[in-house]
Image (cartoon, rainbow, N blue to C red; front, side):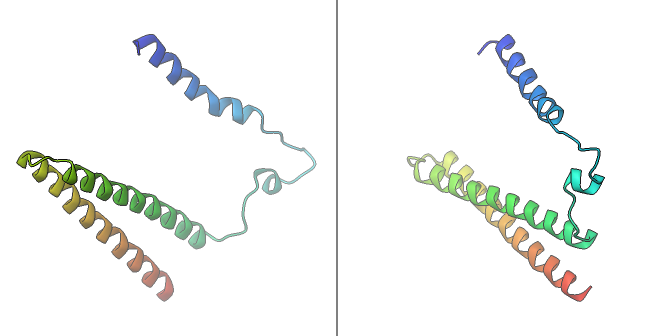
Length: 114
């Protein structure tokens, strides 16, 4: 793709949220809370939900990296450099997954005591 096409696509992608925001309609008779669809959750619950979703996303990325490292290992064809690279990907992906699981356990433990 040429440079103009890439720039055009990026500009369009940047303008899509603006168009979506412009379509938001505010009823003057309703309260701000109803119009913005805010929840009744407290800050602790909202923060826990955000951290839980973030850890789930990072965990999904770690699992994808484990799969990618396994595919690289299986398709190395005996090339030692590719095998070492695949082992490094697998090792650090597993370490990351363990850290994610431990952080989830720590988070749940701390919240239960607070």
